[in-house]
Image (tube, rainbow, N blue to C red):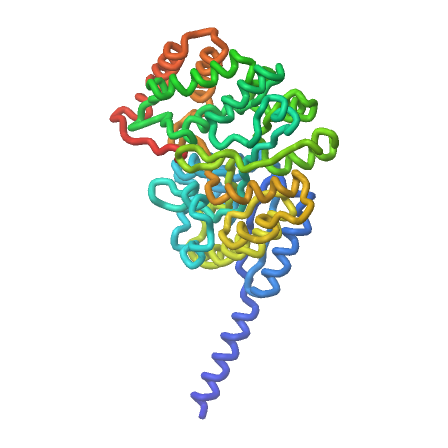
Length: 427
């Protein structure tokens, strides 16, 4: 009897201790979400804590331009957050530096939920480094009156047709047809199936690359490309202003751009057509830029199961769908991406509504186009852009300009990859 009483007392004491135990704390970071999405994330916190009384969530939001520095500081100090918002290039760099934790085991219970293209974006060296949250794609917005004047009866179905239509528009109307983001020429090359790096060496001066740049140069010479800001780091403001001013036949833009056109220039909006942007020969859509939640290195292993559970909740179908609706982006889960909100075109829909559906068609093929695994990549990319600019504008021979840039790249790549080991690309 005494033993039974003792056991009962011990059990009661254990239960009391468990009840008083401190809840598991999960700190998760986003960038540039406040104040617009404060109600959304505070709602997430409230619902999750109510369903999981043993967990305490702390949401922290930083401006996008300082979150990396804050993260490194906390990792070095041994107090990293449990989850952090990252884009794919940041995640690639952090993973190479050993600052991120692979999440294959944590994401496994819900892996089939996410778009395959999103998971491929987060695969570095055969391991998955994040929980996909959202991405975007580009659509083709075109001025139907300019198309009519140029004798064009439909939207282009390939990049070659975009360039051909641009030349035709210039010839018949005197206006520019297209303003591609040539400061991102590396991504455009990869989308077209042209490798930038292979086996640790730059290869973008091949006959196929030269022929591709020559197509751009021919279109530029014919007046088909908008020359203002063509090679600027961000030429979208110039491009959309030209489109709103009736000076540009086609605009590659996210669907949200249609709202700006509708608000600023109703006359141009009224004659605007929309179509999905053509996939490259690689089957990849233009304009992808995946945002996800990564798990920093140094997180307590005992906390990982709860981190995985919360991350799966944070990025589940319902939450992604709600966030995507509020943010005018596309969810990275299969079910949410196929929701009627994105796929259905209501009767009497305008260009803005049609753009949402056109983008949804391409979303399963959205990838973040960049070259992974290379140190100081932005510096190298600027060298490539300068070479392409010289070739497109006729200031230099295309082959010579590309070969000179390849030599500069390979001098630097040889130091990083002395044995010419393979380097992963963005596709």
